[in-house]
Length: 349
Image (cartoon, one colour):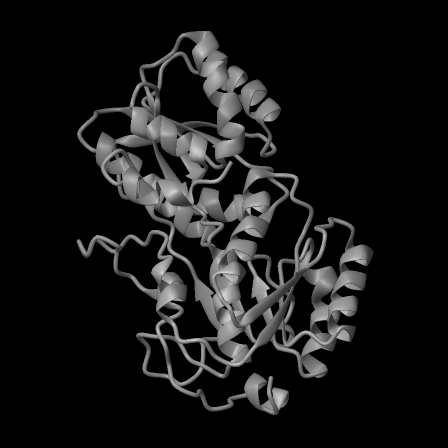
């Protein structure tokens, strides 16, 4: 950090000139300037920023056992590679709490300037993050939040409630003129808070459309196999409905298989997260999948932007304040055939 006091950066140090590097994760302007409020990938942010002091960023995340988690690691690496003044030290992802604590401690001991941590379990990793902060190393908390704001300088993540809300409004607008419209929900695991939030947002949106009734809800577990199995049961139990909200595009692959096997096409489906497969299906427009609501893995790239900004004592372009915010919640845009070209580069495998 070139002689700049770390504690000063953690707690209100003045910024040395707000650049534009965080426009990609904070701007509400679309790339094509149509002003519709949706945000896509903005790789120009890194390119437009002037190089600054060298920053070493340590990155610790969970095991990449899901397409979205694999994309998180790829986005972090890609963004770091765009900066000539950033060195990224990334650990092998782990879902073992003790192992991830050890990885964070190793990064701290190696002398990184800033940490980016996506904890396998936020509560269990809180103390490790607190220790890093107390050692003067700012922590960017990615997605799964720690138990206390004292454990991070900035939190950035997706909006699970917003996913459900936007999925519900999309479906509601398409069905608002259909008398007695019926919808079903293929959720994620019920033991996860994110599932509860996605369902609550969906239900709150549907409350604006009195002609629509949610007639069934079943939980899968974010895998292709579970999506296929649970969707098969839903199709057998519901001989006719108009739309389905599926929480996760990975399990949605299985749901599509079940739908094809059943020969059903009287409804449309809205997915969740923004996989490449889902976007390609939306673009082809030859199946039931008509939209997906983003939970963008580009948040990892933005976390690298934030870590670099903290390490170089910079603020956020477009904001009046000298410091980066303490939390950033990303918008869950709805990707449809009309805007899928914009979002295709952000789709993950």
